[in-house]
Length: 242
Image 1 (cartoon, one colour):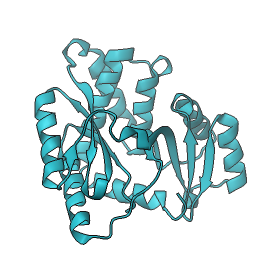
Image 2 (cartoon, rainbow, N blue to C red):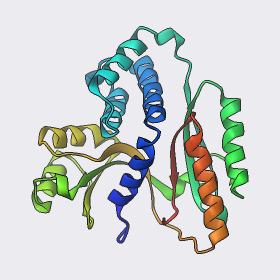
Image 3 (tube, rainbow, N blue to C red):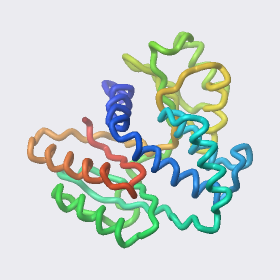
């Protein structure tokens, strides 16, 4: 992944998210509700909730907003009817795309996702058609300017906590973990006072694909923009080398 500025990508996403922070908070609020329904309101005993809280903090969601969401979900468990659904497909030139959604109406969501692919000259495929091209990993991104530790000390802190890999980029550090070890590593870094730009379990492409055709780039961007605008869509992963 040499040459890829993960921080630049994260920063770009966060700036875009900041422009629609209300939507981001709504998305995370849904995730909190589902996590509480499935495992209870205590993050110490609910890994999924702890992971969502980490994501909320990385998106600058205030602690009181997080706590209100947990309390509301705990008192409203019987009425939570969202469910997770994943779509896989191809964009222009065979770009692999995975869409994670959280919805109370699978027919609506499926139609919207299919439309987003079609308008970008792509198509939705069968389950598993592209997910084998990705690895599910815990990923933590740290801004170099915000971190007081040098690279070696930070790497040892992360590896001692159970991280699988550590990579230094021009402007950031990346810590990768097994999904099951993610929360332990994240907590260790948080206790060490290390500021994290992003901390989440994500899908990382094994290889990236470049697009040189302007029409293909425009079509792929249209699909990604339509998916980003859909309130049911929680996350979109792709192997486009932006």
